[in-house]
Length: 56
Image 1 (cartoon, rainbow, N blue to C red):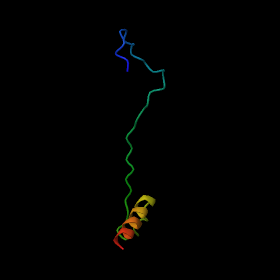
Image 2 (image 1 turned 180 degrees about the vertical axis):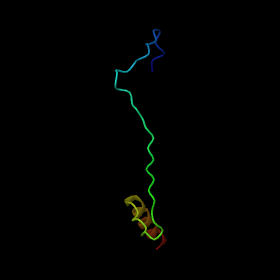
Image 3 (image 1 turned 60 degrees about the horizontal axis):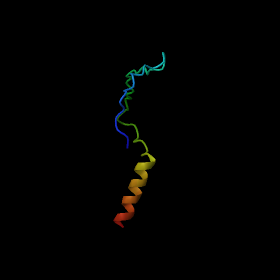
C-alpha cells in the first residue's frame, strides 16, 4: 500500500451539464378499502414457501 502523495491533486470540476439534477417527486397511490390485496413479490413468495417447508 502506498502512502499519501507529496503533491496533492487539485479539485476536479465536472464538465458542464454532467452534474445530476435531482427532483423529489411523490408517487403515493390511494387504494380503496375494498380492493383485493396485491400478490406478494417473488422474494416474499419464496420466503413463505421456505418457511412452510421448515414447519412440516
